[in-house]
Image (cartoon, rainbow over all chains, first blue to last red; front, side, top):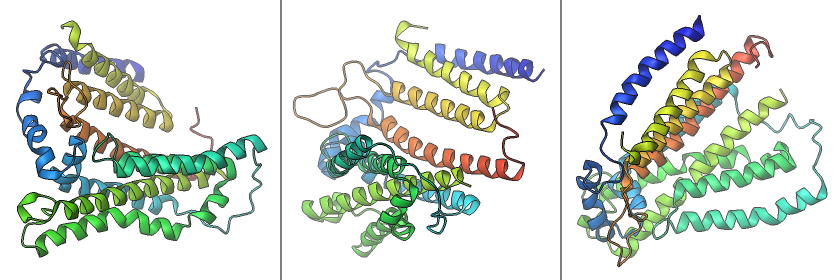
Length: 238
Length: 108
């Protein structure tokens, strides 16, 4: 009965979707409104106004800076709510019997973790000129730490990256966005206008501010994902 | 429907699969997986709306004229990060529900 109701609702929803999909314009057409209205402005002036060759980074950090800041707030809030439900992992519950995998697996992880971290650093700092950026690099950092945790156990990881360190990193992105935003007000503009050329900062300084934002986004998103992984991993041993 | 629009159809199909999983599966974990499938379909739809035939990645280089639309890519990047947050929150709620209602009761 329940399945029948679900299928009825689904076919209704599918009919509406089908009607919408069939009346959409052809995909990839240069004449589409998505390709002809807002975007030429970003593509033509993005490089001059923000100094980023990568337009995605330019939009993320400069044109839609508010959006990125509030997104970090959303991520932070999700972590805070998850922590309020389950609680942070603690070092006291150290008495688990964790079986280390074979020597081969451990050696491969020990050799590759520094390389992964170097790649993450490259992705974060070269987000202006190549495809990449803070979020992508942060996720690579988090994945590396998760691989390390799966091989060496949660306690070994928590000893190296303590909850106190992660607590600082998790809030770093919001704090640096606030700092950059207030810097814009202090220099006589609006909030978060710091990286636009209207304020007359030198190119080097604008680049440094964008790099600060990028690195702090990377660290914060990485730390948040690591913390979320830890608090779900903690459940496994009760 | 023209043949160029088949990605929209794939996105629609993925959305319906995710919706069915949410509606018809009793297990909480599978409902969360269904929500994730729906999110993925929306990402696919947004990215394919922003595509442009013959366009290259939106990294400004001399000599390249056509770029794909960078705006959906930004939006999808943000939506992915938020999807991670909501999924983790939903999973931790599911864990709490399992704990308080007796473990193993709603498994499967």
